[in-house]
Image (cartoon, rainbow, N blue to C red; front, side, top):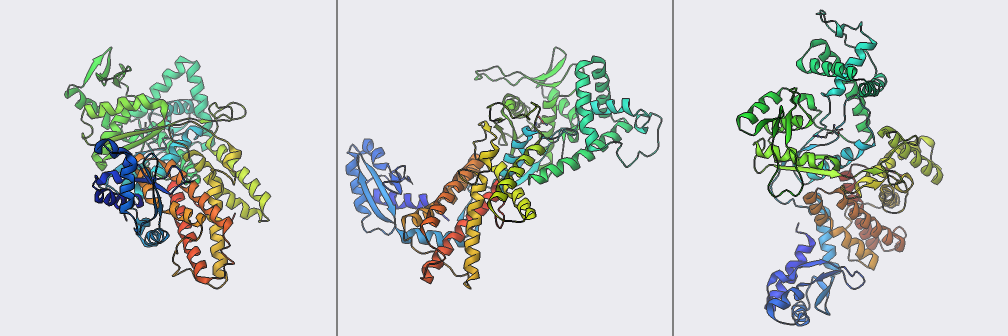
Length: 588
Ligand code: ARG
């Protein structure tokens, strides 16, 4: 289906043309003075210069051509040359009736289908997820869903940190604690135990302990680096231990991501491209891109137009060790070979802006990607506490993601129990669903690049620009529909009618914007567009709801028309929250 604004612009364009002006001047936009009109066209002002005429005259001439038109009920030239527009109720009704039966509400993707790899989550094995991992998961998941809805082929990859020094640290610390384990016996040739010699809780204690020791004790660090080296070069026992760490950690990560309703198609990690590094480095040397500088192998990525210093990409340190960016480059090579993506999207916080600039430049320069391959870094701001500083626990430590989710769900539970006489069990289940909306909406409603304050009280509120408010609106509609059905009436066959009140029309106009909203959300990879839209839509619905006695309406046809309208509202809202990565309960 064509977007409403495009249809209106076409209509207006014809009027401009009939009056002797360029049709392009007829571009119609949503009114920025909703007190005066619903839509507007500023073309007469743009045309004034071109045609050496007063804008008011051009506007009046175009308006005249629209007299008796079926699309607009009001076309009014206003000083200094605006065209103020109101739509015909019948036209809006027809548009929405088409929208409700069309696939995806008539949304038509623009451009060709792309294959997109999204790199999000980025957890580090054996380390618990903390608040810093929240945004990558939540925004990445939503962008994945938005791109899929738009018809693209999307592959989500978790890209675990599973290969670096943290592995060596754990293995070395374990060798001190349990030297009797067969993994450390070089002469051992038998099968290694299937059971890991540690639990996730031990792992989560071992890592920070080892990491702290290595910072104080150079000898300890040396040993950990040695262990890393042994692991990477393939020492059998170390590989077997590493596999245990990976399995245990992955199961725990999966549990955490499941709780957030975040999922990945690929559970690849840094280790998966380890073997590609020597080949890639060789190619970069042969291509004349990589050269030795102070013993390190580097690729220059600075450009003439740079206004700030962009340091070279270091591929190998002087001791031959690969770095974070070496792995990212090898991962690009792997992704190109395996999936031939048209686009790779990364989600990390904005402290990695320069880093990804370097990696992308290096990948382009060395031909790891095609010239037309799009490399996109969506960098996000920090999650702050109420003091405006990065979110911390009360004791000042790093906040575990689990704890944060738990806190929100508890607060949600408290609020739900306060409101209704539900059973505790029911309230718990509802609190889990609504709590997730509070976290995700609280994050996604901000433009990704901005920092935001994690405000448990505000996020869990049933009023205002929050997830629970949106869900409350959906639940309210569900309850009307249930009561309607209980009165013995049927939902099928109901069609929207012409709006009878201002609030009904406002709701209808808001619904027509779905298409355009989605297009910009896809284009800008911006979930906050979806949030802004459903907040306005929920407000429009609630205003209509408060003014309209739907269930006691005596005229059956009028009532059925309203039922069709609120069904469409519910369907659009539910589609949108699914794009954001959460769902609505039956009751709350
Ligand atoms: N594991 C990294 C971290 O915790 C994030 C990985 C981001 N993705 C990437 N391809 N570099 O900081």
